[in-house]
Length: 70
Image (cartoon, rainbow, N blue to C red; front, side):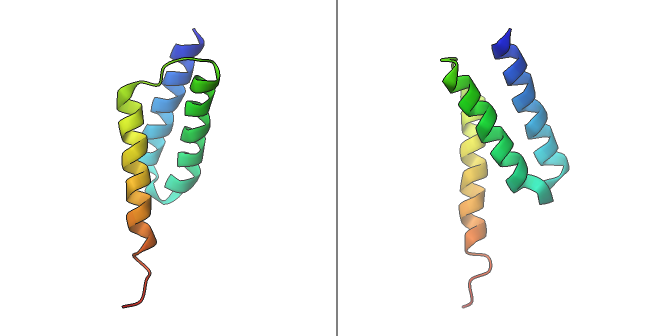
């Protein structure tokens, strides 16, 4: 049951990231915490969630250079 609850919580966070992109960084931290909970319980992290997490992190690294002067 814990697995399904954590997984549902993760998908809710992903929906919130989609609805509130300005709060993405805060919500990403919540996502990392939920994934850490899964790992801490020895539960598998679904592959689609890992891919989405990686994509969000990749997007963050792109944002780092958006404010760099040229």
